[in-house]
Length: 212
Image 1: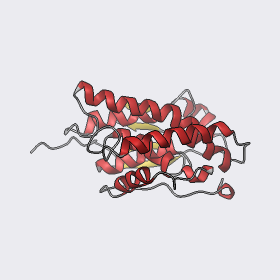
Image 2 (image 1 turned 90 degrees about the vertical axis):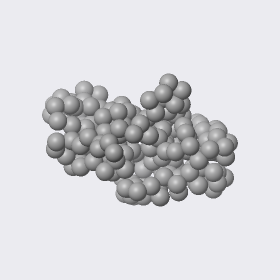
Image 3 (image 1 turned 30 degrees about the vertical axis):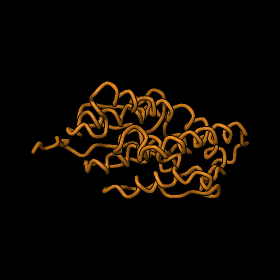
Image 4 (image 1 turned 120 degrees about the vertical axis):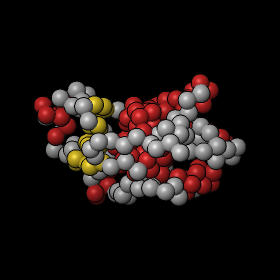
């Protein structure tokens, strides 16, 4: 039996409680059973613009992880790193070209339609910004395509969960916070339930506009 590598010290996760990008990293760390500690970055007060934080990520965004001498930003990049560094089974990020390409396809969707649709709609509601109707249109198209896809297989990129599912989970699960209902998408809701049933799952607290 192969023993998965473990970090010499807890991984430090720079996060923000309202960030789904940060949550996807926290979720994956928990699913992998890796030791980590969280540092809350107060984006509302501009802590992400301080010289100390910009030294970690010049783009001034969470999440950022520090794993030993490595400092790494960008949630999808972090998911890839953690999978390649700590998941020796290759389950979460397949090593074969076709499997890896399927995961990358969904990571691109997470950075595109998911970010521009459900994620943007949620941010607009939580921070009381004017809502852009295009967010709902993008979300509807995305969820309709996911609904069709998930009718054919239980997870997005393979028959078992991968980091593709982790990248898409949070902003999909919290889409109702942006006024986007998941009721029309039973396959999507069943997929969310499958992820939530995984050992080590941790959710992100539900929010309302008054909480932001």
